[in-house]
Image (cartoon, rainbow, N blue to C red; front, side, top):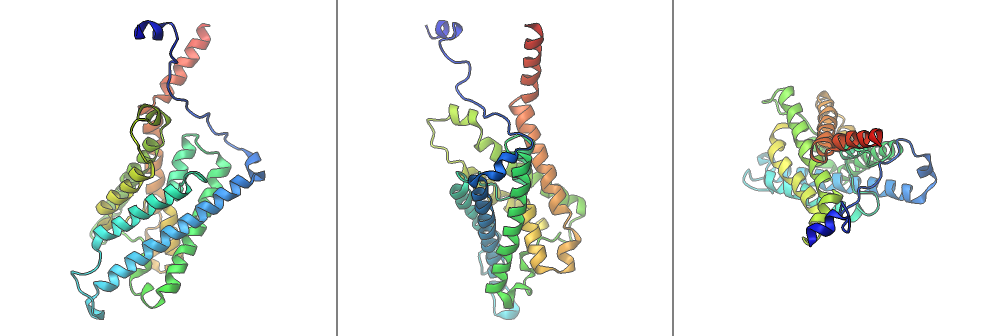
Length: 285
């Protein structure tokens, strides 16, 4: 009976609805309060993220510095830093998802823009707000830890001398791919419809993705996967070493985000195949 009903169209062909593609340029957004509220949310979320990240890194380095009475076996360690960063992303995405989408990362915004989830206007303004928030967040951490800030590197991303630039770039590309792919999967309307019986909280897998990527890449690059995070730390620390390989922390995340957007939209969701099929059906009609 179920088969007959479905064949005669009693059941919808799809049990989910994809939102329409965002316009490339939507000037109407500039006149809406919700747009500026989203910008404020992105700014503040990135500020808080960088503040917690830098304070955690400086605290760990000061606790393990033997020249200042520290213990090499003390501190939270890389595992603790990864938990702090991943946990903070979980909290911030949970808090801001309903306001701005909870991007908190220009690479995430770029990936969603390529997938036509946000307009060019929103993407550009989000990235500016995120970078400004990151700079302010690191500045706040420096104000609280002024004596230790410069001593312990200011949380700036630098390529470990033991690794080549190619390895560092690849680590940033792969790490960002994992993050942005997780964002697409966790927010996929098809998944939400099919798994509606399972209480899936989207910020949770996103936070875990950030956690595991930090475990893998902290020894290589200090883990960027977020151009705003790398820029904010470099601007406030402002030492030559922090700027030497800054390009890695922009090129890597944007390339990783682009690959994730292509993979999810055109391979997993078969957007190109669907578009081609639609054109064929229209031409045959």
